[in-house]
Length: 95
Image 1: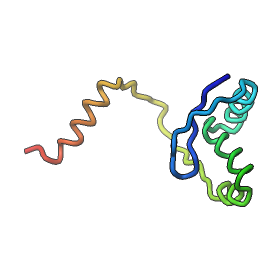
Image 2 (image 1 turned 60 degrees about the horizontal axis):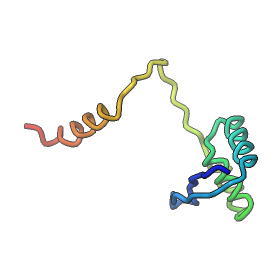
Image 3 (image 1 turned 180 degrees about the horizontal axis):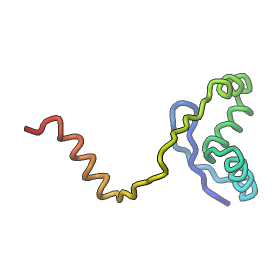
Image 4 (image 1 turned 60 degrees about the vertical axis):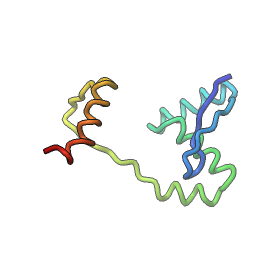
């Protein structure tokens, strides 16, 4: 069995679910095929099953943003991110 954390509706609640291994693998395959996340697939399935009208409306509204960069990426450690965040928060008050 796999344990899965999912977001519920627009509240973004974390919920731990115990799912059958076969279902998790099928959901992961679906996510890979759709180029989306496992959470998005689980949300779609739940929405379709529990709120069929809402699923159609949500599907029509969804737009995946795509950002085209130059291909360069930066490898930033958590320590570096923390330092940068602290600098950003203090910079408006710098003398």
